[in-house]
Amino acid sequence: MSTANRSPFRLDTDLIVLRSLVAVAEEGSFSAAAEKVGRTQSAISLQIAKLEERLGVKLFERTSRSLSQTSEGEVFIGYARKILELADEAVLSVSAPKEQSILRVGFAEYLVPQHLHIHLARFKRAHPTCDLNLILGGGADLLNLLNAGELDVVFAGPEASGGKQLWQEPLVWCGQLPASDKPLELILMQEPCSYRSIAISAMEAEVSDWKISITANSIQAVQSAIKAGLGVSVLPYSALQEDIPVIEGVLPELPATSVLSYLPAQEENPLAQRFIDYLLCYLEKTGALKVA
Image 1 (cartoon, rainbow, N blue to C red):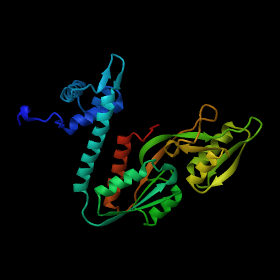
Image 2 (image 1 turned 90 degrees about the vertical axis):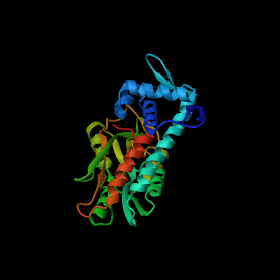
Image 3 (image 1 turned 60 degrees about the vertical axis):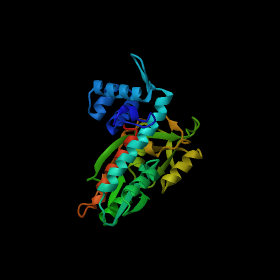
Image 4 (image 1 turned 45 degrees about the horizontal axis):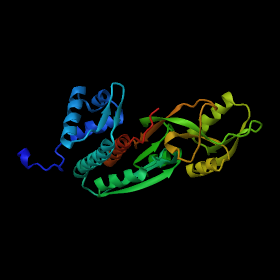
């Protein structure tokens, strides 16, 4: 088509350029973005320069030491993310199995991503014939359901062998520290719970005056007790909420925790792995992961 007839308000670029653009914004440098998308740094720089020329605005402010988004860049990159999400969703929608299917998913409460409802909605739109059954609970209980054939995939911590590690994230102390003359009061999930064991081991190794003051049967109960100032607890980063205070540099150092997916040994649901891959893709795009 002749450039003379091209509308100045039409986006004439491809998804590769948009992926490069978003990668630059997320990584903070052209070199890191090039490594992420598998292209050379010079190719990324040329793509962005041509896009800026086409739009007639600067998307990034560049100095020898830093790279930042302009106000126009922030707006355009927000739209670019939406375009890429729609494009990926379109691919999923036509490549998904057409037969009616039920996918039964178990999430350990501690590990539920903050924006899980958005992910579930997008997965359902891409797989309209799939009926999703979601169960939240303790990791050990969910794995028992998986072994009994009542779940198709479970997301939990290192509760058992046979899981596939998806990512690692920090464990953090959070809550309200007591006065210096008072024992440290712990708010913990009931057994069996790997984070309960980690907290107790840390206390036994480095803290002399402590006690378990509250044993809860749900993550909501733990979070509520923390917000009420009733003690401290150990939470994975993904279970933090804005109004939960984090304790840094005072209590024993904690290890990272692993988030794993568990599938049944036999008769795997073909949608289970698609759900795992889709979840990882969503978390990576949204920056919801804080990898340890």
